[in-house]
Length: 211
Image (cartoon, rainbow, N blue to C red):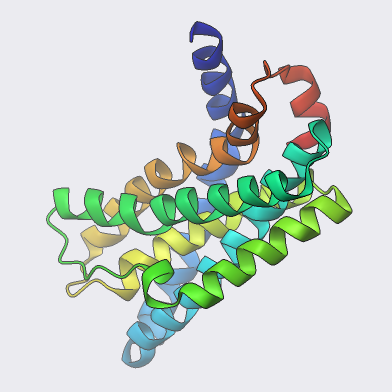
């Protein structure tokens, strides 16, 4: 347990700077859209979220399945790991964490969960991503894209389904997104597959080869 905790802390420290940078970039972009496209802002945010979320799950499934398959050549188990890692953790980071933390900060958010509203699409992108991860064995690029897309998906959710947007919303959103992304997403691609493998993670290998 102590080893797993130290591994998790190492992974968080390793990915924090990239997550902060991606969050700042996303906040700047959405701020520009808000001030220059105010009449279409809500529509743009909702459409963008419904694009970013499946893309996030797609690259997450690639990374999780690829890492699992690298150490255990089981096609169906790798698909299952990619599927669960992408959908469960992706839903937590893109929807559940932003929604719950937003409620704590008194944001008036509507709850929307894509896996319930459009299960065929979500399951399809996760399965295809898992198969692609197994076949290509890609880990590094999908993992970085995963974090980047997760930042945008979480942030887009906060603005797409927010009934009241104020200047304070932008500040709070940056904090919420960082929490929503850094914990589940920065750990899921790498630690999640290893929980199923039952192996100790050797971080010098992960840093140099997978993340």
